[in-house]
Length: 111
Image (cartoon, rainbow, N blue to C red):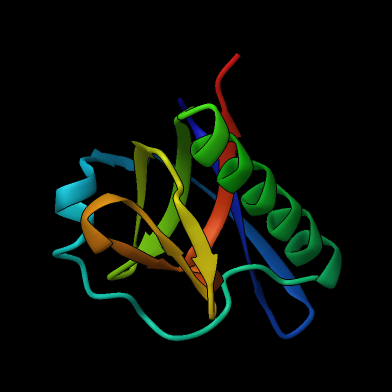
């Protein structure tokens, strides 16, 4: 799966193609997360918030897993897991594993 990510710098846009590293939920707990927002528009942030809400609902009521694409340590990662809680700017996974919302690029749902 190739993900196209755009980086914006002062009125210029460059696109890079990156293959995220597939990691486990427990490996996610060992990562150090950078500070700062990875999305660039309010519309993107709103869509992410809706996806997190839907994923939390599906995780709690139907125990459905999602894929979370996020940035940490200047790299892209993807983890397949259930989101149990979204609170105070963080996504909570099983075993108190946390991912800052501001580092989440996308959430993918399974059929």
